Amino acid sequence: LRWPELYFKARKILGMVEGEQSEGYLVDTQNTSLYLVGSTNSAVPSAPAYNSHEFWSSLYPAGLSDVVKQLCDALRPHLGNRASALSGVSSVLLSGPSGSGKLMAVRAVCSCLNLHLFKVDCVSLCSDTSGATEEKVQMAFTQAQQYQPCVLLLKDIEVLGRDRDRLGEDARVIATLRQLLLDRDPALSHPVLVIGTTCKPQDVPADVQTAFLHEVKIEAPSEEQRRSMLSMLTASLPLGKEVSLSKLARRTAGFVLGDFCALLSHSSRAACTRIQALSFPGGLSEEVERDFCTAGFPVLEEDFSVALDQLQDAHSQAVGAPKIPSVSWQDVGGLQEVKKEILDTIQLPLEHPELLSLGLCRSGLLLYGPPGTGKTLLAKAVATTCTMTFLSVKGPELINMYVGQSEENVRNVFARARAAAPCIIFFDELDSLAPSRGRSGDSGGVMDRVVSQLLAELDGLHSTREVFVIGATNRPDLLDPALLRPGRFDKLVYVGINEDRDSQLQVLSAVTRKFQLDPSVNLTTVLEKCPAQLTGADIYALCSDAMMCAVKRKVEWIEEGLDTESSALILTMDDFLQAAARLQPSVSEQELLRYRLIQQKFAAC
Image (tube, rainbow, N blue to C red; front, side, top):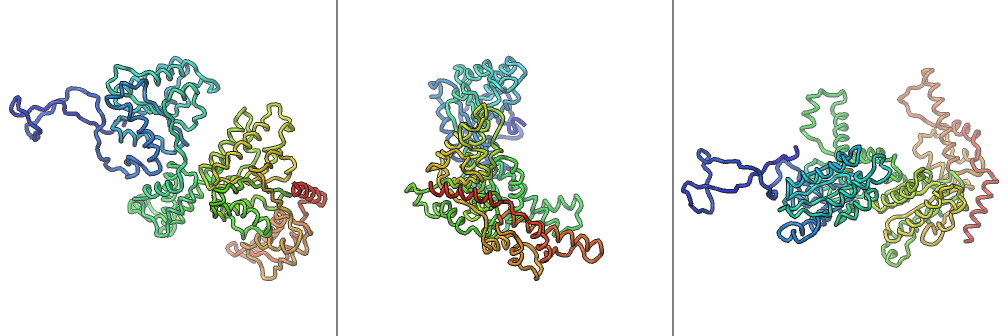
């Protein structure tokens, strides 16, 4: 319903005695008559919201109170008797990510200022011709005047002013929209206030953007705001005693209102599935299931964990999707000196904020070395240890065929990182994203522009201070030299192969710590049968081959009736010896010598 509530305004009251003056009258239900004489324009009366959740009916909802206040401050001067002295229509451009609560903030403003809300989806205003679109835009403003005083909400305003192919601008529609936003109708006794919303402010035509008197941006909520939003949204939800909203707020860095609604929906579904599996393993009828859901059930911490994993997996296709990894230092064998250098660069400033005020913080770290040495695993382990959000980006993912899109992809990654701070951005295969400028060979200069954009974003990290960048590359000599200057990737860490048996044993123990090994397995003996120079990827391949040998043996035993599928898979010494006999090092002696020369070159810088 466009208007779910109807209001009546008493214009005149007649008592029993004609001409009698009184401060009030009592209504006699048997004799009092009501006469509806027409409609009138008036402000919306303040009334309590019935059958509504506290969060959705709040005038200043958690996480959006600052936005509501900014909107009220922008619109309030255009209300009342002094509004006629102000030129133009009061208009606000409200921008924010999808699901950030733009519509909810506008509704809260209308409730605060007692205004009607007239919503128009700008997609429905677009037509095949400029004239038809222009007519629909004018009609929307005309209809809004019928409900004055009101707020005309133009959703997704960036779609207006684009031509039919969405490649250029439609000057006729832009001129009409600009005139409607800037010219105030003196005949109106009550104002029509305009709020345009957009998820992509950069796509709003410049002439339309400058026509709005005010601009308000919804930022990603801080940890304290996320805690308040979760507290209000879960007020009527039965939570388990072990559920910590503070911990949940830390794990949901970068989440907006829509993400929290999805999180609660997924967690409730996970709780329902969990209880059904425990209490009704054979299933239940539709009627019993409906009664079961109506009765309610507690949502536990494990349900929120399942929901978070589902949401993060659903967003994992996006470039730079934020996620807190679950990689511990136990998963990383060896590399003790490398671990220490990385933690000193990232963890130390977080634990000692006074270093930030002195300007002694480094925000860029470059891991370089042969492939398969664990550079990505190291970055994930650091993010887990420091409880930081992790954004993993491969260089080729950001490259786009359209002009300007690659640079925008770089900007979006850093914007996501700032919204999810404290955060680590991990650029894998950095040499493919930022090669030396002037040598890329592309006719359009795309790579040069991407490098320039990356440098600009790295220079802007000093104001953020809670966003760290880790790059990984096999060829640091191919990188643009400007990336390695102070303030950018100025800390270079060489991640080499494991040449001594002790470090190799640490890696092998880390990889096999979740395996079920036969008592006869001796990892030291296994390594003695392997080549001398092994990377972490080589050792992982060794364990993978040994696992396949064990699987094949188990399949043969099951087919012969000597084993069952329910029994555990146990790796024997023979499995490892077979895998070791086939193992070939992934880094040759010649390649290793080249990497050592590269290490000496950068160590001398």
